[in-house]
Image (cartoon, rainbow, N blue to C red; front, top):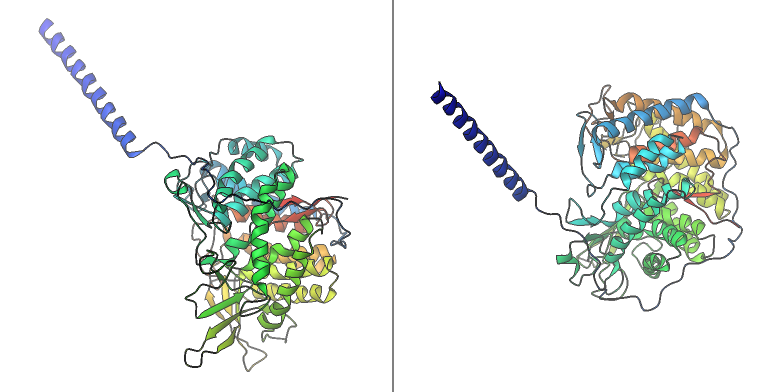
Length: 549
């Protein structure tokens, strides 16, 4: 019996030793597979600014009023939209917390924008605007733990991080009455990292900034092929941060980009507009130019260039009208846009609507001459232009631009109403046809990824005109989108708007809550609560307070 007990004790001791050894091996293996994260650190500047461009200050100049809507809130529709937002937020809060997004079908968190919590930060001002204060404060608390000095990817996409993260933080600080200091602190933390991307010989930023010290400590310059929008859509966020912090270097950084765009604007192949690809390196000559190997240049208000034009009148507003530079650049760009890009599609009933296409200017190798081709391609991304033109028409006293904006917005509403689902596709070609009763279109990209641009323009048109039919059109759009995209853990992009029952593709980008649902909500909210005469919205629908008299 004693021998048996001893054997049992020895077996127990052996089991403990084996267990300890296994745990040790697992932990050391885990440590080996999970290396210590690398952190960004500020490097000495190689090309420091010698004379800082100062932020314009002083009493704002008189600017015509934008809004005229006075119908008050539509409580029932607001409630339905708010419920949709709460459903999407709950899916993210319960299953994607801390990740950039939640997969709305499978309920799994995933990272697509550096792993800092894109949906978390992008949704902040929406939560506040919708009166979801508990959810807002919960999100602010989580935001305080974000470490922007390390990332799940080697580079920082300047455009996306600026409009979603920096814009989201600054806007949340603004809309909440500047009472949550942590939001400003995190904005400055991020801005200091982004500012390092401007340390180049010509102060044009690396649009994909390699932040790790091993790379950041070396000299770098902007690329010879940069997407126009990624270069020119940083001004609102950095300007508003400069206004709040009184730190002029943030404004200086983006003002230099504006100056370079202005210098090149009337020298492009389509004077007044810029091509979608830009050589920002400064290697061949100072300033901006088209990439040297380019034999064709595309000009569009769609993807890759859209928000550059959007930011011109908005920066004018944010600076209190002190710089006519932005007004002049905007008006110079709209002339060729209206004359060259816009077209009236053939429609049943011969509707008086407009769509914005694109122009390509190519080189004929035989003759050496450049020739121009208009392509009647429509993109969901171009639908923002109706609201932009209407707003620009108000602040610059151009009523004809308001009317053009109306026709463009009607064109996007028609694009929604013309599909099986009642939702516009990502892109399509609207070509002239012989019949006015059955005009076909070619849906080149049939998916819908929860984009906001159409409802954005509907919102602007309603606020500017006060006409009820914009609200009615927006409500039909919301019902269609909600019906076809609602999933178990949020709302999902769909594969084909031409199907009666499209399939969910398990994606919910952060702009769904940040932009699309926000615009739907604001369309039916009290007009003076978040007035366009008090606020400027960035391209991610983040609210920045305009300077007051």
